[in-house]
Amino acid sequence: MNLGMNLEEPAVTPGTATRSALRRQFDAVRALSSQLAAALSPEDQCVQSMPDASPVKWHVAHTTWFFEAVVLKAHAPAYRVFDPRYAFLFNSYYEALGPRHPRPQRGMLTRPSHDEVRRYRDHVDASVAAFIEGADAPTLARAQPLVTLGLHHEQQHQELMLTDVKHLFSRNPLQPAYVQAVSPPLPGAAGAPPLRWLDFPGGVVQAGHAGTGFAFDNETPRHEVLLRPYRLASRPVTCGEYLEFIRDGGYRRPEWWLSDGWFAVQAEGWQAPLYWGDVDSGEPTVFTLMGPRPLDAAEPVCHLSLYEAAAYAQWVGARLPTEFEWEAAAATQPLRTHRYEPRHPHPVAAREGEGLQQLYGEVWEWTRSSYDPYPGFRPLSGAVGEYNGKFMVGQVVLRGGSCASPPGHLRATYRNFFPPAARWQFSGLRLARDA
Image: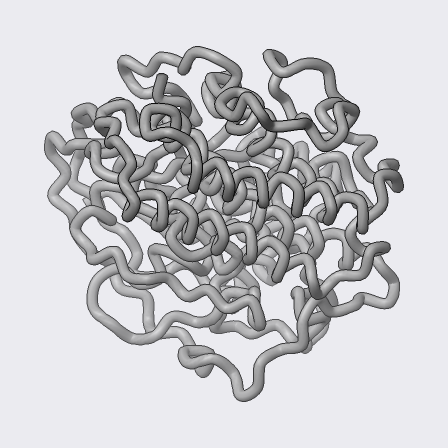
């Protein structure tokens, strides 16, 4: 059973080198979560600002529970559960693994304490490390895909830790900073290059994971897609460009909006992207993980819903790409190591360059594709079959990655997904047109 991995990847009997590599990966991912949490007080880590967000303490405990429930309990017979009650507290949505605490009430879990969750994490870390080093080869070969899945699952939660803390701090009247901004500014923050259009021929293209390395099950199976010729913008839309849309009455004119989007504007009172302020003045501001600051017109605009992204595209005479247009274009570009700077968890302006700029690592880019199963997709058996497949309704695909996406987590076939009204993620847009 593959359990979330690419179904075409053959099992490999782990030798000493494989055990060492897996242990290094495990230690590195778990250490990054601890690093991200270290900037927060126990009080910061306990609060839940809205039902869609979770406390950092819960993220830390949930990712630990995943390794305990999916790896250790299933493959390490000698393992002793740290606290049987944690299965109820820290299960997210796995029906096959039992009942769970309601998601909107995670902020009520003042107990277990922050220190107790750390002891829980240390207990599971030591047990997984001992399992990797000491399990017999056939057992580790069966469990290795699950360990790898757990690491990529934790990387998803590392991004959520930052987006959820940002939402939490934005609701605090003190508007605290998660980190202090780096100084001097990062390269590329001086201004955005002019937007250019790149042409792509379309035709019959291959979409989906190719069969090497890790992939989530929703990236498979690989299949053919027919595309008409199309064009993509060379970089994401900037804050300055989006500000022009606002000042042209973008949030007051229904002709640009999808019906559900216009309803959301009216019901929620949207007037600008999430975290923007003083838009009607000459000095708009934005709340960041470094605290409030003046809006930088050159930065990629982010914290947009699909509705806002689609409305801007309509206003400017363009559209959003489909996920397959985005993937086919990304396949023609080198997979550059994306910028990840925990001291500056905020998008920065693009730099002049050839090809498609900032495909990865600044803002997730909304597409116009519903989150649907690929032809031939089958949910996996067992509890981890609930990882992706059961969410394939009412969601929209985003591609690329954001400034909060950890290293080694992104690829051209990665399918992120959220409801169309979601705005608390680092989500922006890249324009498309028919050629």
